[in-house]
Length: 57
Image (cartoon, rainbow, N blue to C red; front, top):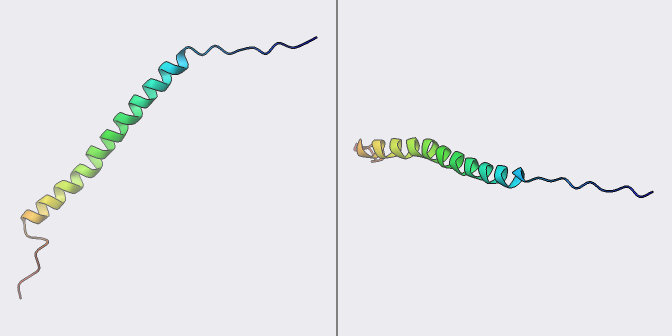
């Protein structure tokens, strides 16, 4: 007797993968905005206050 290989039907896998891709992209965007944004803001703030200018002796 031969054993039949059962095929798994996965209609939801494509939908899950697409949703996962969207959540990964949005997570990357959020990490970029909240990770890089404050650093850039602090650098601009320090630059306007003269932090990067050499001191005058």
